[in-house]
Image (cartoon, rainbow, N blue to C red; front, side, top):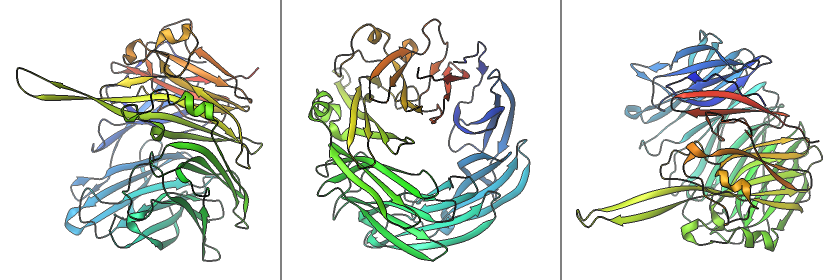
Length: 490
């Protein structure tokens, strides 16, 4: 691996990687989501030192700054997407700008999308922006604010990668808004749009991804034929807990995830589908229960206090060249501790945020489980600052690599779920890589066996990729550094 000796003084935290070229990469920094500016920093791969830092003032509507939605580095320019909630006009508007690498304006801010009849700041709807697989197209889409007793509505607009509009389309879905949500939308290189949706079931409370949905459904909009087709994704009488979808080539959409036996969301099995995007036919569709021993291993403390099986969140879906899928799910939940102060009579509650065991499952194109492995880990923090928690995932040459921060004593004995030490002081944590080969054999190794890295790795920031190289990021006390892992499988 490469890990520079020198750190960068950075009072403003790094938020995300936004793109790269052959010689380096760009990240952006921002203190708060409502700040009127961001910093664009460029680093070289040769030494991982910062070579430039450019302050970008976010465009304004009148005298007020817009809010950053997304920024993408593409073909030596930046696509900047922002939004603005206009309370007086009941509008939530999305804008786009095109900038060069010095931050100079190539194409001034213009409106790319809007949500009308917004009556509350807490219910403004949401914007998203996606690139096609070959990065030639940009899809802008939004969910409208939730409106009870109305059919769900959805809007998409397509641009080229220089932000020239190609077409737009609005949809009124055949489902009531209170039971329905568009989870994501994808666009292929031929301008077809795929809308992945979930249905919660009649009269069920809308919740986050951790709780199961009655079913998922896929809408395919073929713009050249102006045709909208729906495909139901079902696993018999089971509920779908969580899912991911990806366009893997010009003709194939892959989806996979976990299902549950009830709406409570306790995971019980996996499913996998493959759709031919040219013909609209399901090439494969299958599912299988998780092995009983896996369920028993991860339910050593299975009650509401410790999250239960419903608390597993699907972190990553990886696709291999042979058509198999690797699913990575992590147990994430919140617990509380309450103390009554006898002197003041006050009730004091502390919230603990946990990121624990990881399930890794290899699934065939037909939905059958090849193997399932558990990575035993316990992470806990008493603040909602979880930048050092969770995992980073990488796939290279059919092996899976999972990076996380761990208690140093856990390397000294055999790891079993519920039998390891919890890391809560991340200043004393060590970075560990769990490696799984093609048949699921597991090995743990420290990332820095011979030296103090000085910075604490932030797994959520690290770029998840499917190549030999993985960018990583560490920070401590206002100083940070970037580095790179080079994986090998011999």
